[in-house]
Length: 124
Image (tube, rainbow, N blue to C red):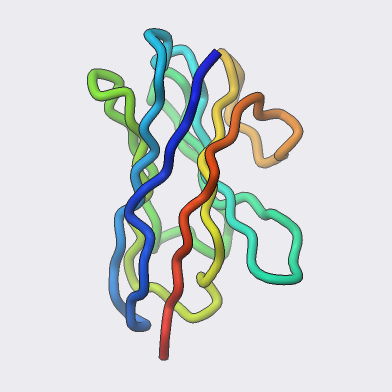
């Protein structure tokens, strides 16, 4: 089992950057494929990015590709989401999720563990 905790959210102006962190408990972090999702008010939770447990492959939603970068540091049991060129439509609660030894997935039901979320607000 793994517990996840996000940090790094906040208020930023459009065009700015933020880096979100997802700290995981447990000794088997390197066995988990990690994903980032977001949920805006009144909308369903949507996929943002994912990184394979091996770190060998990444996948992005079309809306963030080229602006966001997902990475992981297995020595620190932490996954990251670097967000650049932020837009107002990126405003949402961002969640990290973990999937044991699975391929990257865009589907929320494929992830076993979730963090509590961190708010990102982009102002114009």
